[in-house]
Amino acid sequence: MVVAKSWTMVQHFQGAPKPEDFKLVEKKLPPLQAGEILLEAVFLSVDPYMRPYSRRTMKEGDVMIGYQVARIIESKNSAFPLGGYYLGNFGWTTHSISNGKDLRPLLPEWPESLPRSLALGCVGMPGLTAYFGFLEICNPKPGEVVLINCAAGAVGSVVGQIAKIKGCKVVGAAGSDDKVKYLKEIGFDVAFNYKTVSSLDEALKKASPEGYDCYFENVGGKFFDATLPQMKDFGRISVCGAISVYNEGDVLPSGPCVQPAFIFKQLRMEGFLVHRWTDRFAEGQKQLLQWLLEGKVKYHEHVTKGFENMPAGFMGMLKGDNIGKAIIQV
Image (cartoon, rainbow, N blue to C red; front, side, top):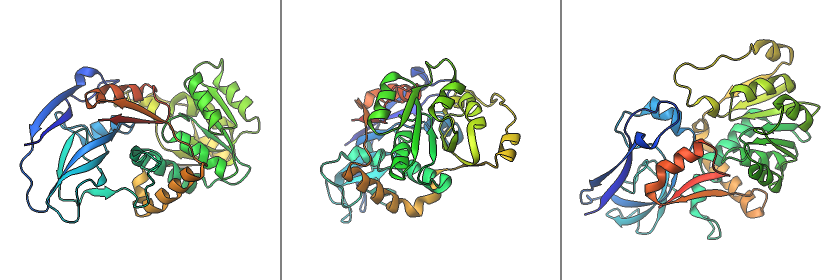
């Protein structure tokens, strides 16, 4: 008899998530039936989207949502032999029973030199978010200037490296000097700590006096307000996230009037969800994996060890403790 441990959401978050918002529960799993497999979590993902989606898709008492890389430890399905690794949307739980229909295999050509946790990062949802959200919406051209905020995170750091591959000048903003150092190590042309500059407007102007052709938006709020006037004519803005307002509740703060800038600069802004390109995920994963192996894209993982530390890892990620992808290793 296998006992699965799961983290549940006790109550919907009010403001920033707190330790008391989570509860660890245990459940005995039934014996496998014909056609079923038993999986054990190896790596679990914590991501910003979990904060707004928890209110949209979860009830109080539900297991927290999220993807994991899991290994088959028992099988009564010949199509899924023991020891195989799969990606599953099982949430924050240590063990799961599946009939295989809800599993996605890791790429068959997965090299032993790369950790399987990258299926949750550079070669997973964050990498695909960067790949499609930047290339399809911003349509970057060689020589253009690209701005990325939250640039040292799981998505932003990949966007910046793809922009360099495409021949762009890349400017990144991050929230610590260590993150700024990392951005320069992976090839950003300019990086600055938005928390320590005396003026965000001046920092953006200094980084690119000529303005910005493409803006990959992860933050929203005052950063967006400062960037909009500095967009070039016919600039493109890809809206991936708005982490600055995720803890604000249902009533969001008002911002400046954006229409004049959009009209007179003839800007284009588009929000997206990465699942728009589900039918092309294999294309994106193969390209990202190739760039990783060629050294054109580098990765960094912020690993929290221990399933019992999942809430702490999640809360730390929302506060910006991580460089690169935040991962929980069981």
